Amino acid sequence: MKTWFITGTSSGFGRRLTELLLARGDRVAATARRTQTLDDLKDVHGDRLWTAALDVTDTAATRTVVDRAFVELGTVDVVVSNAGYGLLGAAEEASDDQIDRQIATNLTGSIQLGRAVIPHLRAQGGGRIIQIASIGGQIAFPAMSYYHATKWGIEGFWESAAAEIAPFGISVTLVEPGVARTEFGGASAVLGTALDVYADGPSGSLRAALSGQGPALPAPGDPVKIAKAIIASADQTVAPKRLTLGSDAHNLGVAALRDRLGALEGAKDLAYSTDADDYIVIRDSPPTLLP
Image (cartoon, rainbow, N blue to C red; front, top):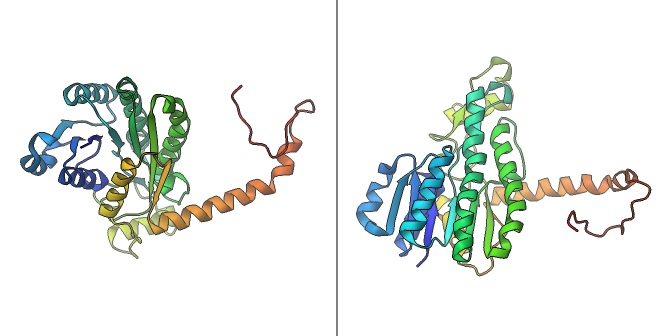
């Protein structure tokens, strides 16, 4: 039996993970802004479901809840940073408050959760951190600029931090789903105020799709299958660095990375030509910034 700590468990992947883990006999510390959404699971699974109200934009509350979970549960084997949502629309359509909330939830909230759990995991001798990112951390679509900023940002954070905490037995997996059949594009999505100048562009098309007035967005991802894949990754002895889940995620990711790599390789001679004359480098050898 493992003990899991999961944020954003009222719906989406967080809810599916919680249901599946409890069904297989694991123990779950589930947080949500409204814990009453978990009452039905509490009635069935009793003490194996530990709950706490948490808005991850409140850093002090995150630290308090994390500290209490580790004290009351003893050991937490897996931490899943899942809380998040999408702010959709053209960059010009979002308000300052909407932008701040998007970054505070998806990016700063995930970073501060990591900072809160790392000392506990280090003290207990290790553990697993699973960050729900997105294939939107590798690619970008119009009308999703602020969402992409948070997902690209959290991938960069964990790319760096994972190397720092690996010596303590703490592993990190970035989960990159494609579009799944969750509430992401529905109840949990936030749209900026529509501007007429964008009505005929990607922002207007996205609004039409979300409102049912245009072609529906393809959503191949099955949330239960995705949740099962995440759980299976935590059972692996060696944590995968990334889990790309969904045929759309795989295809879009491969295309974007091939395009980026081709452009980078094409710029190689220019890149090398800008080195200082007294800098000696073994051509084609992997560089390092550390001594």
